[in-house]
Length: 121
Ligand SMILES: [Zn+2]
Image (cartoon, rainbow, N blue to C red; front, top):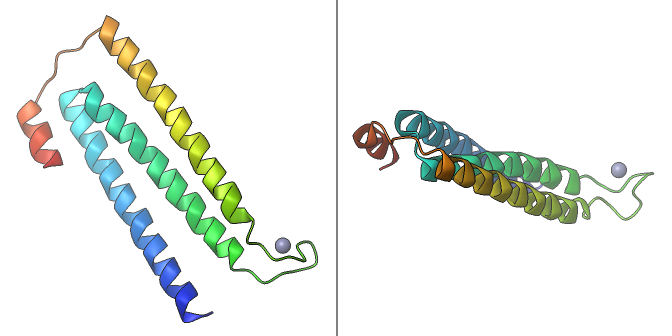
């Protein structure tokens, strides 16, 4: 494995790890506060985790040498990965819009704002 490739993997791993940590923090903040704004942020974090995971895998695949089935190599997977990430962001957007509509018509009082904000700060 080339050195450049290896540090790519390391950064992807760090990116994936950080997005999982953020995801957990944001969902905890949401369950403390029931704030829709925080929930949108948390949903967006799920997208980041899945997209990072997929990007990780596609970078791995793109680094594979050409083979019988793929005589031009595996670089094209990166386009697929970008398309996938776009689709994920779009669906997160729809979930967030849906949540916003729900809580507009059925607002829940915000709770534990002090704790929730501490958590995010
Ligand atoms: Zn192949």
